[in-house]
Amino acid sequence: MIIASDLTKRFGAIRALDGATFSAEDGQITGILGPNGAGKTTLLRIVYGLLQPDSGGVTLGGVDVGLNPVAAKKQMGVFPDRLGTYERLSTREVIHYFASLHGLDAKQRTAAIDRLVSELDLSEIIDRRTKGFSQGQRMKVGLAASLVHSPQHILLDEPSRGLDVMATRILRDYLKAQRAAGRCVVFSSHVMQEVAALCDKVVIVARGRVVAEGTTAALCELAGEPNLEDAFVKIIGTTEGIAS
Image (tube, rainbow, N blue to C red; front, side):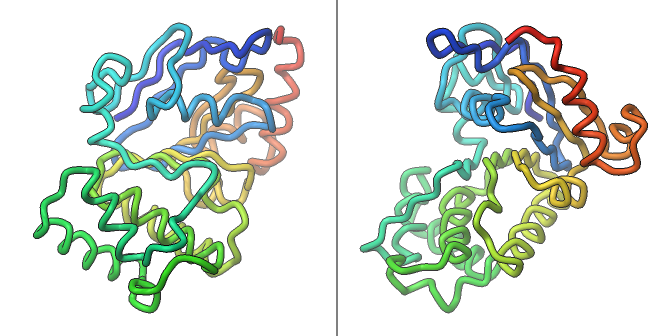
């Protein structure tokens, strides 16, 4: 379980987060939804320890991310907003490298790579250099590298950006499988259909604050609208009076 409490963060005169609070349960997919500049990426970067908040804190599986970042990172897999690959390395070598960083021994690395080849259908690209890979293939490599250590908490920042239909389906199916395995999955997205189809809980962020959260049905009921997109627009519209 992830608990983020009263997070604030400024970049000079810009208030990126203003007391943002939310939680994400194990065995669920939690979506972070908000307009550009709402603070979604800053929020996720604080959760996975890349940024330090000005105030507030995050616990992940009961571990304080700020006080014990190494222990927290052992429990998390992070798929960042900008996906890069090592173009001179093969898919196998990339996964092996990240497995080593996470402290897996030789036997564990081999087992983890075999598992990921099966789960993500990597057989055709496992021994190919990643240079020239399509966006969908790069997504698979990034996922494998992020999750090679079987983390309990999975954090993804707009993971379907730039993916075609088939790659998006593969990603969605994989995240559903992680939920079924009891893991805590959190991702940000601009795609309403994706959030509505996948998420057990939706957290709406605007102007650095969490302005609403709940199931898709609960948010639609709150806004009095028939679908998530209309509910989102209406809920965001009510935040116009919040000071920036």
